[in-house]
Image (cartoon, one colour):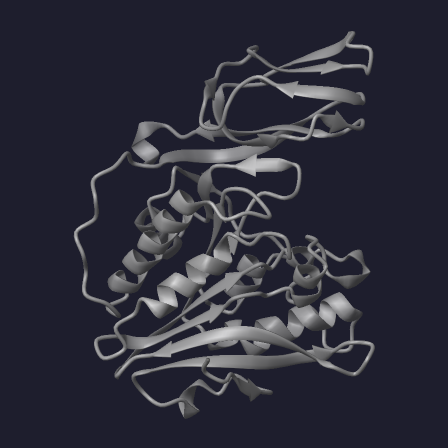
Length: 324
């Protein structure tokens, strides 16, 4: 097994051309003074070109992105590659080791960017991840999944008003694309503030590997690399075009109980359609929920045990055809 290089800074210029390097990048230390190190694969081509980044497991239990990074990086022809691909296999080390979504202290890293040098543990970690990794990139694809108790389709969140991120989103050829300008606190938003075009790819469900979604994600990322001039372009297999949504939002319960979801992922619903039934432990119906508007099911809850304010459905509003 090839030994990983330990680094305090991601010195891409120092890596040899036509190489695949395993890096352990120091980003802090734990309470036993042991280093917290990001596992990173860096593929550097024989010739110069753009630097594209992939980040997986920013939420520690969202692991579908890890094999995507592995397969993209290990599948590259380093002699033909132009530029550099940086793949962060696990972005949230404490969350990953604890098999949980959140960072230590209960912080959601994807609400803490750009972070803060001298801030609390989550702010400092986010600051270092941003400046030690993302600041070196020309393009970023941030890989996520649904959180625990929910399922997702294969979909992209991107600012579709930006020609660059719009083009990247379409190259991935997901099932759906949701227009979602980057917001404060997200890694995608912080990258955009550094003039790094970034999109988020939601790859299905947490705490599992989904082979078809992984395969499709690898193919989509390779299409982005080819579009950047880093790889030779390959003809893409014909398939259904993604559904474009102009916006999306979640429905929530107004009571607690046992929740049954009626539609499936990618089903289209009309305003007023029954989409969920809530029952008490005796089986009595407490509430029945209707779709507030027409749309397509992007994701939904799969855990029947639901407190007041629990998530029901994530519904996307399908954009008019002229916006596609």
